[in-house]
Image (cartoon, rainbow, N blue to C red; front, side):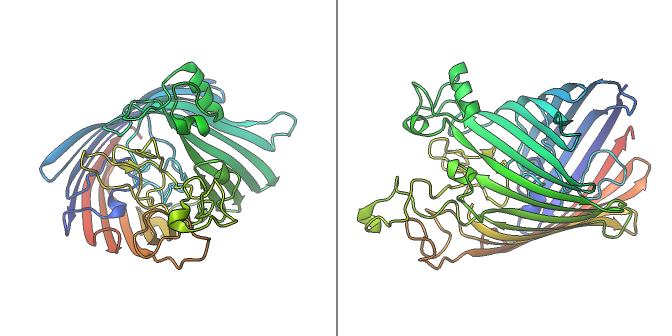
Length: 478
């Protein structure tokens, strides 16, 4: 038997300029408005009983509405159902993707209202920054690999989703494959290796893209080039817009604490998958106490570097009339341009917000109101996250992010471009940006809490602004 949990969140937001700062809207599943206004979320979901047998089921529904600048928006946030048998699962509908490095969590239990203290929520590709997509997923919980004595385990998922909203390529589909291996290196030390891959394909746009068919779907799954009817790029390269991240994680569990070291490498083509984009990646170090009733229970530091992108030279787009003779180190794999694509110009963006790493800022809407790709994927960033309980009772989290942003290879924010010039031959300049957030909950009575937040942006990329949020949350069923 499943327990049913219901909750209601009502929140208001005020900004000094009208625009809400970066961490007020980022990694919130696209629900917060961009400016001063309000947010309401009504949610219900099932929690499996601890005594559940091999067969399980789950369901959830979450509806949201926000208002800002005289405009209102009603949204389906989650609407899903799933079944499971032992380690296998199947889920369908609109559901949040999982998040890691969670803050201490709600003082009332249940779902985590404070979210993750990581800039990526632990997942570079699908961070929870954008609205959910409808689809299905086949899942496998951690399962021992035969003949390993349980010291090697595999888990992952296989699914397909549909994009929503106005796009350059309308109704594009997304295929997702996740595969992870966990190896016990010592009684308390594990190593995890994983692949988080996505492919945007099919749909309808101004230019030809590979149509939906079983043959093309097979090509999407195996990363093969398109057949008849595909575009020139789809025929010459992999079908659709294929990308993702490779993940490496060390996890040590001590007596009452846990230390995690994680490295995620983004890729947009084969060169990235072969690590020719080294040293690009998001590097995370997290220390967490098992006991969360502490002033500080979790400390996380991240350093991100995405400047290389397999090099600054690409012979396919090199023009000797502009750049001079082709340098000997030029190749066909430079300029990966993370989360962007020439034909699927929407890039890894859904309903106006980057699906993955939020520091890859999405472009502003164009003349047709479309958000086409990201405008900033070359950066160096430091991020600090803290979580705990004030007075050992009231959960909070603090997030501080400082980045130097360079735009993209072909359109730097400032100064000369490194594009089509030997690596290191140009002294590049970037724009600094600092974003901060402090948010938390104050328990009032059983099932009722006060939520609050303070946010700040200062720098040369985003508008200088500050804001505060205040809300009330009621939850029943825990």
